[in-house]
Length: 242
Image (cartoon, rainbow, N blue to C red; front, side, top):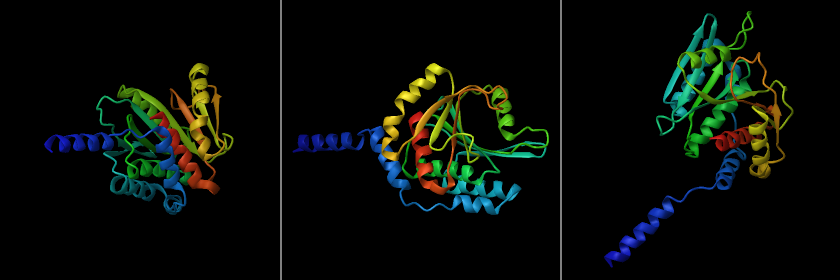
């Protein structure tokens, strides 16, 4: 009887540790966003300046469990950063960013972080969310400030996923700013995973020497009219990169 009990416990333990496949996780993400109400955008539109940063800080700390939150202040520019470390202290850094004057893009970052938190998706990379100050009169923005901070701290950023609603990238298209070889690998690998979500495209873009953040960049322009579908797609993209 004792041996049978040990065997049953072992089987239950293995079942509990069974790995979730990417397809299963993507289905979970899709269901999570299906019919979900979204309030972050409207809330962010109500605030400006310090009040907007205070609201983001509250959500990130209270609701999303950010381990560390800080501001990056350069003159009149104020950006907010939240970090979600991986279990491995030596895990590389990956970033998702949006300008503070684009409420829907900032809201999409919160939605991604909320989905990871609610669905208990373990991030293998240390995730850093950057809500950055838009360009000032000199043309410099908070993204450039973050790039300098990374360089000064000798931190290596795997990639930055830049979200916006400016329309610079065609709808339902993830732009990959990397070498042709690496970009093609993603272009070939991603579509099957996105098929359950709809028709999404993956294209390579050339490096822009004027872009303030250096390294691998991904860009996605959200359509506010179908926000939850867009948030689901971005969450899946971050999950697969993770």
